[in-house]
Amino acid sequence: MTPEGMALTDLVFGAVKASSRKGKLFTEQQIIDLVGSRDLKDLQNRIKERYPLLAAATPSLKGIEEGLIKSYKDEIDRFIKATPDLEPALRMAQREVDEYRAIETLKSRVGIFATDSKGGERRPLKEDAAQSALKGFEREVEEATEIYEKYKVPGLIDAVFARQRIRNLFSTDAGMTKDVLEELGEYARLKADVFNISVLLRGIKNGIDRKALMEMVLPGGGISWKLLQEAAKQAEIKKAMTLLEVAGLPKTDSPRALERFYESRISKMMNRAYYDGYLGAGAIMGYLELKYREIRNIMRIANAISLGIDPKRAVQDFIF
Image 1 (cartoon, one colour):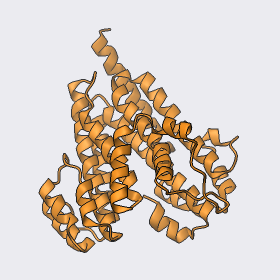
Image 2 (image 1 turned 180 degrees about the horizontal axis):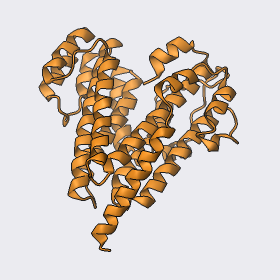
Image 3 (image 1 turned 90 degrees about the vertical axis):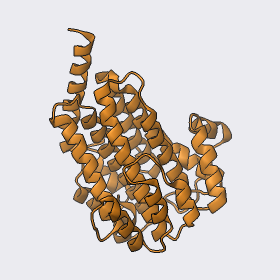
């Protein structure tokens, strides 16, 4: 078999592997049901069958987070071994997991501390541990520190990291075939649109300085830069959404409905990439995206439970 044939076999194998795992993801209703867990131990018991690493973990916020992240990174490693042609993109998915620790470390550096399950503030990492957590994220750290010092909005730190990840996705091409690059290019454009819509509409809803929102807008998606800038200036979400409809977006009744529209487009694109006979990069990246979204939601639920947040509010404000 030729090297080209071998690469095709690897990618198809990886796509089939990813497709077989989709049925093992929690449904949206199952995720919402997890919010009703009595405590962290109950939450851990509910999810340990799908995340075996948690079976022996201490039922704590840190234990759950570390178990979820390690499970995800281990799965990415298995996909890298099965589909070496996709390694650059898969390494970026792995990098997204490392962002979580880097973001928390950076927030502690600028004086934002998470609250632990006993109601006390977590202590910031020692400097050597902080340097280790932030290694490789120098650009994100510089940009996020600058924008936080300017606007004092913690959520913008998360947004800066997400924005850079999409920039990296646009520039990833090492060792990839033309077909794979076309799939990832479409994926990156949709991710840019989801990012821009989420940042703008959530920012307007929470009264964030419009200058900050305009700084965060990311070019490269399907919605024009001019239209995004105009939407960022609006005082109300409805007016911003009306403007965005000009770009062909559907008329929806909420920002979350608009985000789901794009999530659906990404999902359909991933399925088309697989079922229409492409190499299967879309199926693999789509599965990993859904998996990491599940993990993020579970971590948010764990945080809400540890803080004693009302389940109804947790569903509304923490589940995405």
